[in-house]
Length: 466
Ligand code: SF4
Image (cartoon, rainbow, N blue to C red; front, side, top):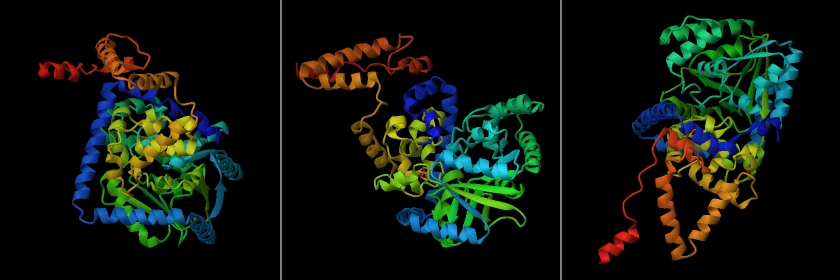
Protein backbone atom coordinates (compact mmCIF):
# COMPACT_ATOMS: atom_id res chain seq x y z
CA UNK A 1 0.00 0.00 0.00
CA UNK A 2 1.31 3.41 -0.90
CA UNK A 3 2.42 5.95 1.65
CA UNK A 4 -0.28 8.28 0.36
CA UNK A 5 -2.86 6.05 1.95
CA UNK A 6 -1.16 6.43 5.30
CA UNK A 7 -2.38 10.02 5.50
CA UNK A 8 -5.93 8.84 4.92
CA UNK A 9 -8.32 9.91 7.60
CA UNK A 10 -11.42 8.04 6.47
CA UNK A 11 -11.32 6.10 9.73
CA UNK A 12 -11.84 9.43 11.45
CA UNK A 13 -15.09 10.00 9.60
CA UNK A 14 -17.33 10.34 12.62
CA UNK A 15 -15.05 12.89 14.27
CA UNK A 16 -14.84 14.99 11.12
CA UNK A 17 -18.53 14.61 10.43
CA UNK A 18 -19.53 15.99 13.80
CA UNK A 19 -16.96 18.78 13.51
CA UNK A 20 -18.57 19.79 10.20
CA UNK A 21 -22.01 19.72 11.77
CA UNK A 22 -20.88 22.21 14.38
CA UNK A 23 -20.87 24.83 11.61
CA UNK A 24 -24.50 24.96 10.49
CA UNK A 25 -24.04 27.94 8.12
CA UNK A 26 -21.43 26.12 6.01
CA UNK A 27 -23.36 22.87 5.90
CA UNK A 28 -26.59 24.72 5.05
CA UNK A 29 -24.97 26.50 2.07
CA UNK A 30 -23.51 23.22 0.79
CA UNK A 31 -26.82 21.43 1.30
CA UNK A 32 -28.76 24.11 -0.58
CA UNK A 33 -26.33 24.18 -3.51
CA UNK A 34 -26.24 20.38 -3.92
CA UNK A 35 -30.01 20.06 -3.51
CA UNK A 36 -30.59 22.72 -6.18
CA UNK A 37 -28.17 20.98 -8.52
CA UNK A 38 -29.75 17.54 -7.92
CA UNK A 39 -33.24 18.95 -8.60
CA UNK A 40 -32.14 20.61 -11.86
CA UNK A 41 -30.51 17.40 -13.06
CA UNK A 42 -33.58 15.32 -12.14
CA UNK A 43 -35.83 17.69 -14.10
CA UNK A 44 -33.48 17.58 -17.06
CA UNK A 45 -33.41 13.76 -17.05
CA UNK A 46 -37.21 13.59 -16.71
CA UNK A 47 -37.49 15.47 -20.03
CA UNK A 48 -35.48 12.81 -21.86
CA UNK A 49 -37.67 9.74 -22.61
CA UNK A 50 -34.67 7.52 -23.35
CA UNK A 51 -32.77 8.48 -20.16
CA UNK A 52 -33.24 5.06 -18.50
CA UNK A 53 -32.20 3.31 -21.75
CA UNK A 54 -29.03 5.42 -21.83
CA UNK A 55 -28.24 4.42 -18.24
CA UNK A 56 -28.80 0.73 -19.03
CA UNK A 57 -26.57 0.98 -22.10
CA UNK A 58 -23.79 2.78 -20.19
CA UNK A 59 -23.96 0.16 -17.44
CA UNK A 60 -23.61 -2.63 -20.00
CA UNK A 61 -20.64 -0.92 -21.70
CA UNK A 62 -18.84 -0.43 -18.38
CA UNK A 63 -19.52 -4.05 -17.38
CA UNK A 64 -18.01 -5.15 -20.68
CA UNK A 65 -14.96 -2.91 -20.12
CA UNK A 66 -14.36 -4.31 -16.65
CA UNK A 67 -14.78 -7.91 -17.81
CA UNK A 68 -12.28 -7.35 -20.67
CA UNK A 69 -9.95 -4.84 -19.08
CA UNK A 70 -6.74 -6.84 -19.63
CA UNK A 71 -7.32 -7.12 -23.39
CA UNK A 72 -8.59 -3.53 -23.79
CA UNK A 73 -5.62 -2.04 -21.92
CA UNK A 74 -3.18 -3.83 -24.23
CA UNK A 75 -5.13 -2.58 -27.28
CA UNK A 76 -5.17 0.96 -25.85
CA UNK A 77 -1.41 0.93 -25.20
CA UNK A 78 -0.72 -0.36 -28.72
CA UNK A 79 -2.79 2.39 -30.34
CA UNK A 80 -1.35 5.12 -28.12
CA UNK A 81 2.18 4.02 -28.95
CA UNK A 82 1.37 4.05 -32.67
CA UNK A 83 0.38 7.72 -32.26
CA UNK A 84 3.77 8.64 -30.80
CA UNK A 85 2.71 8.59 -27.13
CA UNK A 86 4.94 6.98 -24.47
CA UNK A 87 2.88 4.76 -22.18
CA UNK A 88 4.08 4.11 -18.62
CA UNK A 89 2.48 1.80 -16.04
CA UNK A 90 2.35 2.42 -12.30
CA UNK A 91 1.34 -0.17 -9.76
CA UNK A 92 0.75 2.36 -7.01
CA UNK A 93 0.84 6.07 -6.21
CA UNK A 94 4.48 5.95 -5.16
CA UNK A 95 5.53 4.50 -8.51
CA UNK A 96 3.39 6.99 -10.43
CA UNK A 97 5.02 9.89 -8.54
CA UNK A 98 8.44 8.45 -9.28
CA UNK A 99 7.63 8.29 -13.00
CA UNK A 100 6.39 11.90 -13.08
CA UNK A 101 9.49 13.09 -11.22
CA UNK A 102 11.78 11.21 -13.61
CA UNK A 103 10.06 12.87 -16.56
CA UNK A 104 10.34 16.24 -14.83
CA UNK A 105 14.09 15.73 -14.35
CA UNK A 106 14.55 14.53 -17.93
CA UNK A 107 12.79 17.62 -19.32
CA UNK A 108 14.29 20.04 -16.74
CA UNK A 109 10.86 21.03 -15.47
CA UNK A 110 10.53 23.83 -12.93
CA UNK A 111 6.90 24.87 -13.43
CA UNK A 112 3.87 22.65 -13.97
CA UNK A 113 0.29 23.54 -14.85
CA UNK A 114 -2.33 20.97 -13.95
CA UNK A 115 -5.86 20.58 -15.20
CA UNK A 116 -8.27 18.65 -13.04
CA UNK A 117 -7.01 15.16 -12.24
CA UNK A 118 -8.35 13.17 -9.32
CA UNK A 119 -5.70 10.51 -9.86
CA UNK A 120 -3.03 13.11 -9.08
CA UNK A 121 -4.83 13.81 -5.81
CA UNK A 122 -4.75 10.08 -5.04
CA UNK A 123 -0.99 10.29 -5.63
CA UNK A 124 -0.62 13.55 -3.65
CA UNK A 125 1.44 14.60 -6.63
CA UNK A 126 1.64 18.29 -5.73
CA UNK A 127 3.49 17.40 -2.52
CA UNK A 128 5.85 15.08 -4.40
CA UNK A 129 6.61 17.83 -6.94
CA UNK A 130 7.05 20.48 -4.24
CA UNK A 131 9.53 18.22 -2.42
CA UNK A 132 11.67 18.32 -5.60
CA UNK A 133 11.39 22.12 -5.85
CA UNK A 134 8.87 21.99 -8.71
CA UNK A 135 5.96 24.43 -8.60
CA UNK A 136 2.59 22.96 -9.62
CA UNK A 137 -0.40 25.25 -10.19
CA UNK A 138 -3.97 23.98 -10.51
CA UNK A 139 -5.73 25.67 -13.42
CA UNK A 140 -9.33 24.51 -12.97
CA UNK A 141 -10.83 27.57 -11.27
CA UNK A 142 -12.30 25.62 -8.34
CA UNK A 143 -9.08 23.67 -7.83
CA UNK A 144 -7.06 26.92 -8.15
CA UNK A 145 -9.16 28.49 -5.39
CA UNK A 146 -8.81 25.58 -2.97
CA UNK A 147 -5.09 25.38 -3.72
CA UNK A 148 -4.69 29.09 -2.89
CA UNK A 149 -6.72 28.55 0.29
CA UNK A 150 -4.57 25.54 1.25
CA UNK A 151 -7.66 23.34 1.37
CA UNK A 152 -8.90 20.12 -0.20
CA UNK A 153 -11.81 20.09 -2.69
CA UNK A 154 -15.24 19.65 -1.08
CA UNK A 155 -16.80 18.17 -4.23
CA UNK A 156 -15.39 16.19 -7.15
CA UNK A 157 -17.01 18.39 -9.83
CA UNK A 158 -17.21 21.73 -8.03
CA UNK A 159 -14.22 21.74 -5.68
CA UNK A 160 -14.82 25.22 -4.23
CA UNK A 161 -18.57 24.91 -3.74
CA UNK A 162 -18.19 26.11 -0.16
CA UNK A 163 -16.52 29.43 -1.09
CA UNK A 164 -18.67 32.52 -1.71
CA UNK A 165 -17.67 35.27 -4.15
CA UNK A 166 -16.58 37.37 -1.18
CA UNK A 167 -14.40 34.48 0.07
CA UNK A 168 -12.75 34.33 -3.37
CA UNK A 169 -12.22 38.11 -3.38
CA UNK A 170 -10.52 37.94 0.02
CA UNK A 171 -8.38 35.02 -1.16
CA UNK A 172 -7.22 36.89 -4.28
CA UNK A 173 -6.46 39.97 -2.19
CA UNK A 174 -4.46 38.00 0.36
CA UNK A 175 -2.62 35.57 -1.94
CA UNK A 176 -2.34 37.48 -5.21
CA UNK A 177 -2.26 41.08 -3.96
CA UNK A 178 -5.33 42.05 -5.98
CA UNK A 179 -7.80 44.73 -4.83
CA UNK A 180 -10.81 43.13 -3.12
CA UNK A 181 -13.87 42.49 -5.25
CA UNK A 182 -16.83 40.12 -4.95
CA UNK A 183 -17.99 40.79 -8.49
CA UNK A 184 -18.05 37.59 -10.54
CA UNK A 185 -16.68 38.95 -13.82
CA UNK A 186 -13.88 40.83 -12.05
CA UNK A 187 -12.93 37.68 -10.12
CA UNK A 188 -12.87 35.65 -13.34
CA UNK A 189 -10.65 38.27 -15.00
CA UNK A 190 -8.18 38.14 -12.10
CA UNK A 191 -7.98 34.34 -12.25
CA UNK A 192 -7.62 34.37 -16.04
CA UNK A 193 -4.80 36.96 -15.94
CA UNK A 194 -2.79 35.07 -13.33
CA UNK A 195 -3.35 31.66 -14.91
CA UNK A 196 -2.39 32.94 -18.37
CA UNK A 197 1.08 33.75 -16.99
CA UNK A 198 1.32 30.24 -15.55
CA UNK A 199 0.61 28.57 -18.93
CA UNK A 200 3.27 30.72 -20.60
CA UNK A 201 6.03 29.75 -18.18
CA UNK A 202 5.03 26.09 -17.66
CA UNK A 203 7.51 23.40 -18.76
CA UNK A 204 5.01 20.58 -18.27
CA UNK A 205 1.22 20.22 -18.37
CA UNK A 206 -0.45 17.45 -16.37
CA UNK A 207 -4.02 16.41 -17.04
CA UNK A 208 -6.48 13.72 -16.11
CA UNK A 209 -8.40 11.58 -18.59
CA UNK A 210 -12.18 11.20 -18.64
CA UNK A 211 -12.19 8.38 -21.18
CA UNK A 212 -9.51 6.45 -23.07
CA UNK A 213 -10.75 4.93 -26.32
CA UNK A 214 -9.09 1.51 -26.70
CA UNK A 215 -9.90 1.17 -30.40
CA UNK A 216 -8.14 4.41 -31.42
CA UNK A 217 -5.78 5.32 -28.56
CA UNK A 218 -7.65 8.62 -28.11
CA UNK A 219 -7.71 10.47 -24.80
CA UNK A 220 -10.95 12.32 -24.06
CA UNK A 221 -10.86 15.25 -21.63
CA UNK A 222 -14.00 17.26 -20.86
CA UNK A 223 -14.09 20.67 -19.19
CA UNK A 224 -15.86 24.03 -19.10
CA UNK A 225 -13.13 26.63 -18.74
CA UNK A 226 -10.58 26.01 -21.50
CA UNK A 227 -7.89 25.31 -18.93
CA UNK A 228 -7.49 21.64 -19.89
CA UNK A 229 -7.01 22.63 -23.54
CA UNK A 230 -4.22 25.02 -22.58
CA UNK A 231 -2.61 22.70 -20.02
CA UNK A 232 -2.41 19.85 -22.53
CA UNK A 233 -1.17 21.87 -25.51
CA UNK A 234 0.76 24.96 -24.36
CA UNK A 235 3.70 23.40 -22.42
CA UNK A 236 6.33 21.39 -24.32
CA UNK A 237 5.53 18.21 -22.36
CA UNK A 238 2.09 16.76 -21.62
CA UNK A 239 1.66 14.02 -19.02
CA UNK A 240 -1.81 12.45 -18.78
CA UNK A 241 -2.68 10.46 -15.66
CA UNK A 242 -5.43 7.86 -15.75
CA UNK A 243 -6.72 4.95 -13.71
CA UNK A 244 -6.83 1.59 -15.48
CA UNK A 245 -10.64 1.63 -15.49
CA UNK A 246 -11.16 4.74 -17.63
CA UNK A 247 -11.51 2.91 -20.93
CA UNK A 248 -14.28 2.72 -23.50
CA UNK A 249 -13.88 -0.04 -26.08
CA UNK A 250 -14.91 1.94 -29.16
CA UNK A 251 -15.41 5.54 -30.25
CA UNK A 252 -19.09 4.86 -31.02
CA UNK A 253 -19.85 4.72 -27.26
CA UNK A 254 -18.38 8.13 -26.52
CA UNK A 255 -21.50 10.23 -27.35
CA UNK A 256 -23.56 8.13 -24.90
CA UNK A 257 -21.09 8.81 -22.08
CA UNK A 258 -20.66 12.49 -22.94
CA UNK A 259 -24.44 12.90 -22.82
CA UNK A 260 -24.69 11.21 -19.43
CA UNK A 261 -21.62 12.83 -17.87
CA UNK A 262 -22.48 16.44 -18.76
CA UNK A 263 -26.13 16.13 -17.76
CA UNK A 264 -25.44 14.28 -14.50
CA UNK A 265 -22.44 16.41 -13.55
CA UNK A 266 -23.51 19.96 -14.26
CA UNK A 267 -26.92 19.75 -15.93
CA UNK A 268 -25.42 20.73 -19.29
CA UNK A 269 -26.26 19.01 -22.58
CA UNK A 270 -22.55 18.92 -23.30
CA UNK A 271 -19.57 20.40 -21.51
CA UNK A 272 -18.19 23.60 -23.09
CA UNK A 273 -15.08 21.82 -24.33
CA UNK A 274 -14.57 18.17 -25.28
CA UNK A 275 -10.96 17.44 -26.22
CA UNK A 276 -10.12 14.36 -28.25
CA UNK A 277 -6.35 14.06 -28.03
CA UNK A 278 -4.86 11.86 -30.74
CA UNK A 279 -1.17 12.00 -29.89
CA UNK A 280 1.24 14.84 -29.11
CA UNK A 281 1.15 18.32 -30.63
CA UNK A 282 3.89 18.29 -33.36
CA UNK A 283 7.29 19.00 -31.79
CA UNK A 284 6.04 18.22 -28.26
CA UNK A 285 6.28 15.16 -26.02
CA UNK A 286 3.35 13.27 -24.60
CA UNK A 287 3.23 10.57 -21.92
CA UNK A 288 0.34 8.60 -20.47
CA UNK A 289 0.78 7.09 -17.01
CA UNK A 290 -1.75 4.34 -16.33
CA UNK A 291 -2.24 3.74 -12.62
CA UNK A 292 -3.55 0.70 -10.77
CA UNK A 293 -3.25 1.79 -7.11
CA UNK A 294 -5.51 -0.97 -5.76
CA UNK A 295 -7.96 -1.11 -8.66
CA UNK A 296 -7.16 -4.70 -9.64
CA UNK A 297 -8.10 -5.71 -6.08
CA UNK A 298 -11.47 -4.03 -6.56
CA UNK A 299 -11.84 -5.71 -9.93
CA UNK A 300 -11.26 -9.12 -8.36
CA UNK A 301 -14.32 -8.79 -6.07
CA UNK A 302 -17.42 -9.34 -8.22
CA UNK A 303 -19.60 -7.55 -5.65
CA UNK A 304 -17.66 -4.31 -5.81
CA UNK A 305 -16.23 -4.45 -9.34
CA UNK A 306 -18.84 -2.10 -10.79
CA UNK A 307 -17.59 0.73 -8.52
CA UNK A 308 -14.82 1.04 -11.13
CA UNK A 309 -17.48 2.01 -13.67
CA UNK A 310 -17.81 5.44 -12.01
CA UNK A 311 -17.45 8.36 -14.43
CA UNK A 312 -16.97 10.90 -11.60
CA UNK A 313 -20.05 12.97 -12.39
CA UNK A 314 -20.78 13.82 -8.74
CA UNK A 315 -24.55 13.12 -9.01
CA UNK A 316 -24.49 10.66 -6.10
CA UNK A 317 -22.91 13.35 -3.89
CA UNK A 318 -25.58 15.91 -4.76
CA UNK A 319 -28.34 13.43 -3.94
CA UNK A 320 -26.88 12.08 -0.71
CA UNK A 321 -28.46 13.46 2.50
CA UNK A 322 -25.30 12.65 4.47
CA UNK A 323 -22.91 14.37 2.03
CA UNK A 324 -25.20 17.41 1.88
CA UNK A 325 -24.78 17.89 5.61
CA UNK A 326 -21.13 17.06 6.08
CA UNK A 327 -19.42 18.07 2.81
CA UNK A 328 -16.39 16.49 1.20
CA UNK A 329 -13.70 16.94 3.83
CA UNK A 330 -15.44 14.66 6.31
CA UNK A 331 -14.64 11.67 4.11
CA UNK A 332 -10.95 12.21 4.72
CA UNK A 333 -9.58 11.42 1.26
CA UNK A 334 -9.95 12.25 -2.43
CA UNK A 335 -13.38 10.76 -3.15
CA UNK A 336 -16.29 11.94 -1.00
CA UNK A 337 -19.99 11.06 -0.92
CA UNK A 338 -21.49 7.62 -1.59
CA UNK A 339 -18.94 6.65 -4.22
CA UNK A 340 -16.16 7.79 -1.86
CA UNK A 341 -17.61 5.63 0.90
CA UNK A 342 -17.13 2.69 -1.45
CA UNK A 343 -13.90 3.36 -3.35
CA UNK A 344 -11.93 4.75 -0.39
CA UNK A 345 -12.20 1.57 1.72
CA UNK A 346 -11.69 -0.52 -1.42
CA UNK A 347 -8.56 1.32 -2.56
CA UNK A 348 -7.10 2.19 0.82
CA UNK A 349 -8.33 -0.73 2.90
CA UNK A 350 -11.14 -1.30 5.40
CA UNK A 351 -8.63 -0.99 8.23
CA UNK A 352 -8.16 2.69 7.32
CA UNK A 353 -11.61 3.65 6.08
CA UNK A 354 -14.00 1.04 7.43
CA UNK A 355 -16.28 3.72 8.92
CA UNK A 356 -17.16 5.21 5.56
CA UNK A 357 -19.68 2.58 4.36
CA UNK A 358 -21.72 3.47 7.45
CA UNK A 359 -21.95 7.12 6.36
CA UNK A 360 -25.19 6.50 4.51
CA UNK A 361 -28.88 6.33 5.29
CA UNK A 362 -29.18 3.64 2.56
CA UNK A 363 -32.06 5.62 1.09
CA UNK A 364 -30.89 4.66 -2.41
CA UNK A 365 -31.06 8.20 -3.86
CA UNK A 366 -27.42 7.86 -4.98
CA UNK A 367 -28.08 4.73 -7.02
CA UNK A 368 -31.15 6.28 -8.64
CA UNK A 369 -29.10 9.29 -9.72
CA UNK A 370 -26.09 7.35 -10.98
CA UNK A 371 -25.89 7.60 -14.79
CA UNK A 372 -24.09 4.26 -15.07
CA UNK A 373 -26.45 2.51 -12.66
CA UNK A 374 -23.88 1.54 -10.05
CA UNK A 375 -25.74 -0.23 -7.28
CA UNK A 376 -24.24 1.98 -4.61
CA UNK A 377 -26.57 1.04 -1.74
CA UNK A 378 -25.95 -2.70 -2.11
CA UNK A 379 -22.22 -2.10 -2.34
CA UNK A 380 -22.36 -0.09 0.88
CA UNK A 381 -24.20 -2.93 2.64
CA UNK A 382 -21.65 -5.43 1.30
CA UNK A 383 -18.79 -3.30 2.66
CA UNK A 384 -20.56 -2.88 6.00
CA UNK A 385 -20.72 -6.65 6.23
CA UNK A 386 -17.02 -6.93 5.45
CA UNK A 387 -16.13 -4.14 7.89
CA UNK A 388 -17.94 -5.85 10.74
CA UNK A 389 -16.95 -9.41 9.95
CA UNK A 390 -13.26 -8.80 9.27
CA UNK A 391 -11.04 -7.92 12.25
CA UNK A 392 -11.06 -4.16 12.17
CA UNK A 393 -9.18 -1.61 14.25
CA UNK A 394 -11.60 1.13 13.15
CA UNK A 395 -14.25 0.14 15.71
CA UNK A 396 -13.63 2.30 18.73
CA UNK A 397 -13.91 1.34 22.37
CA UNK A 398 -17.16 3.35 22.60
CA UNK A 399 -18.66 1.61 19.59
CA UNK A 400 -17.82 -1.84 20.93
CA UNK A 401 -19.25 -0.86 24.31
CA UNK A 402 -22.40 0.48 22.64
CA UNK A 403 -23.04 -2.77 20.76
CA UNK A 404 -22.46 -4.82 23.92
CA UNK A 405 -24.94 -2.61 25.79
CA UNK A 406 -27.44 -2.94 22.93
CA UNK A 407 -27.13 -6.75 22.96
CA UNK A 408 -27.65 -6.77 26.75
CA UNK A 409 -30.70 -4.51 26.57
CA UNK A 410 -32.37 -6.58 23.85
CA UNK A 411 -32.00 -9.87 25.70
CA UNK A 412 -35.05 -9.56 28.02
CA UNK A 413 -38.21 -7.44 28.53
CA UNK A 414 -37.08 -6.00 31.86
CA UNK A 415 -33.66 -5.05 30.48
CA UNK A 416 -35.35 -3.46 27.47
CA UNK A 417 -37.66 -1.36 29.67
CA UNK A 418 -34.82 -0.25 31.92
CA UNK A 419 -32.74 0.74 28.88
CA UNK A 420 -35.57 2.72 27.30
CA UNK A 421 -36.15 4.61 30.54
CA UNK A 422 -32.43 5.38 30.76
CA UNK A 423 -32.32 6.53 27.11
CA UNK A 424 -35.27 8.86 27.60
CA UNK A 425 -33.63 10.38 30.66
CA UNK A 426 -30.26 10.55 28.88
CA UNK A 427 -31.66 12.42 25.85
CA UNK A 428 -33.31 14.93 28.19
CA UNK A 429 -30.01 15.55 29.99
CA UNK A 430 -27.61 15.34 27.01
CA UNK A 431 -28.28 18.84 25.74
CA UNK A 432 -26.90 20.32 28.96
CA UNK A 433 -23.54 18.60 28.52
CA UNK A 434 -20.65 20.75 27.20
CA UNK A 435 -19.04 17.57 25.85
CA UNK A 436 -20.11 14.02 25.37
CA UNK A 437 -18.21 10.74 24.96
CA UNK A 438 -20.18 10.04 21.73
CA UNK A 439 -19.39 13.56 20.43
CA UNK A 440 -22.93 14.78 20.90
CA UNK A 441 -21.34 18.00 22.13
CA UNK A 442 -20.53 19.02 18.55
CA UNK A 443 -24.14 18.44 17.54
CA UNK A 444 -25.63 20.32 20.43
CA UNK A 445 -23.36 23.35 19.97
CA UNK A 446 -24.97 23.97 16.57
CA UNK A 447 -28.51 22.67 17.04
CA UNK A 448 -31.02 21.41 19.58
CA UNK A 449 -31.52 17.74 20.19
CA UNK A 450 -35.06 16.67 19.29
CA UNK A 451 -37.50 16.75 22.18
CA UNK A 452 -38.29 13.39 23.75
CA UNK A 453 -41.80 12.48 22.53
CA UNK A 454 -44.67 12.16 25.05
CA UNK A 455 -45.40 8.98 27.06
CA UNK A 456 -43.79 5.74 25.89
CA UNK A 457 -45.91 3.34 23.85
CA UNK A 458 -46.14 0.89 26.75
CA UNK A 459 -47.47 3.58 29.09
CA UNK A 460 -50.06 4.69 26.51
CA UNK A 461 -51.08 1.06 25.92
CA UNK A 462 -51.53 0.50 29.63
CA UNK A 463 -53.52 3.72 29.95
CA UNK A 464 -55.76 2.84 26.99
CA UNK A 465 -56.28 -0.64 28.45
CA UNK A 466 -57.69 0.89 31.61
S1 SF4 B 1 -21.01 6.63 -8.62
FE1 SF4 B 1 -22.35 7.19 -10.32
S2 SF4 B 1 -23.33 9.09 -9.60
FE2 SF4 B 1 -21.56 8.78 -8.28
S3 SF4 B 1 -19.91 9.98 -9.23
FE3 SF4 B 1 -19.77 7.86 -10.03
S4 SF4 B 1 -20.95 7.87 -11.92
FE4 SF4 B 1 -21.53 9.70 -10.81
